[in-house]
Each structure stands twice: as C-alpha cells, then as structure tokens.
Image 1 (cartoon, rainbow, N blue to C red):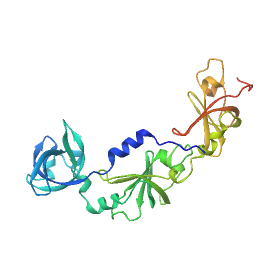
Image 2: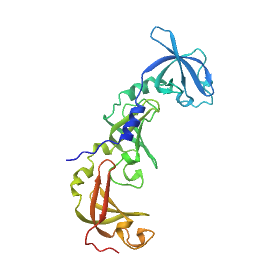
Image 3: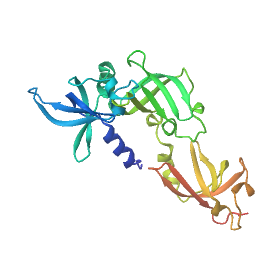
Image 4: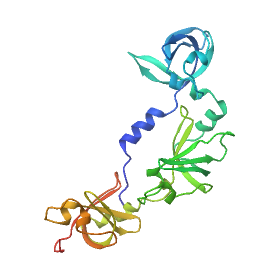
Amino acid sequence: MPEPSRDPRLEALINRLRPGPVRTVRVIGFDGTDVLVRFVDAEGEEAEVGRIPLREASMRRAEHPSELFEIGQEIEAEEIGRWREGQLHFSARACEVPALRSFLLAMGRGRVVTGTVSGVHDFGVFVHLDGEPKGLCTGFIRVPDLTWTRINHPSEAVEAGQRVTAEVIIAETRSGQVTLSLKALREDPLIRFADQVGQVLTGPITKIIPFGVFVQLAPEVEGLLHLSELTDEPVETPDQLVEEGELLTVRVAEVDLQRHRVRLSAADGADRP
C-alpha cells in the first residue's frame, strides 16, 4: 500500500521553528527597536554581540525594548539563527515564562495529546491542552489539519467545549503555541483509494467552482474534474452545464497522495454536453 510523502515545505518550516539552545546574554544597548546583547560564556566572560528583535523581546506589548530591559541586565534567551552577515539573533520571549517553556519542550512532534476546544474561527481552532500552564491557551489546529474531508468552515468539524485528541505537529517556544492535527490520527482515505486510478466511477457533484466541479467518489474522497473535461463547447463556468447533486460518470486520472488530490477526466464513451 502506498504511503503519502511528507510535504518538504512543511518539513523546512518545522526545522526552522524547532527550539534552539538557551544562552545567558547581557543587554548592552539598543539599535532602533532591537536589543543589542552580548553572549556570556560558561566562564562568565562576555563573547560575541547579538541582537533580539522587538517581536522576539517579550509576550508583553511594548513600543520600545527599553520598556522591557535595562542596560547591563542579564536575561535568558533562545538562539534563533544568524542574520546580518552572521550576527546571532535571540528570542527572549521564548524563555519568558519557564513553566510554559517546559510544557512546550515536552510536546515532541508526533505526541498524542488531549484538550478542550476553546474557540472556533474562520482561520482555525484554539484548544486548551491538558496540563498547560493556567491562564494560557496553547493548542491550535489549522483548517487543513482538522479533517480529510473538504469543509467550508471549521465548525463543520468541531465545536467549542468539545474534547479532542490530536497529534503534535510542532511546539513553538517563540510563539508559545502547539500546532496540532486531528486528521493525523486517521488514515488518509486516499491511501486505500490509490488503486482506483484508471477506473470509471459515478458520483454526485458536491461543489461547483469557476474552473471545474468536485465529484464524490467514495466516503471522504472527492475528485476534481476540470471544466475542459466537461464539454468541448466554449462556456464560462461549469454551472452552465451541471448542478450540485447531479450524478456524473468520470475516470480517475491521478491520485496525488502528497497534495491529497484526485484528478478526474471524462470517462471514455461517456456523453459530454
């Protein structure tokens, strides 16, 4: 049975957001809205100069970092990379709440966690994770990670107050957030459908979009039939030819496991408008 490959773009993002080592740094000045710091080595000696961008200074709002730090102050900060000709950058906010950092570091990728949905929005779902520090909401589920089924709004998948079990994608110490996936705990329905390439199937039209239609092929499996496959006649939109709920006979042209897409073509010998 074929396995879906991991999205290389997601892998690159996850690698970039992984927590870095924590260093003790001393504030030595300000450069605009950046905090200039000097790394303090294990012997207490000051080494190279780095900086903390304002967005990485604190979870508290501030117009200028001087509202948060004083010259000579020593703070704990997480290394986040090198910019500006190799200069080391840090995040102080990643270490600002020790209890939160400890909780996030325990949220390893692939860990299965439970929590309660606290809010459902157009852009995703917030979750109070079990064991998170009091007063915080650390879990978040992006819309594409809610379900394998295409939905129009997250409220079709979950509701506020619902208990959920999810898999950790990444815990970000800098944002204080754990990105979760509900669908990761369920098998991709396309895996078992992949052997249907070349088959002629009939199913109802579930959605009409400007350049084609989605057709239901199996439970939780839809395919896209491009407008050019619907007719040889010049038309502007598919709704000039078909309507939602209408049965359509199509051929499965491709099953793309990485992008979770099924491409359809006109079935040989099928009537075309």
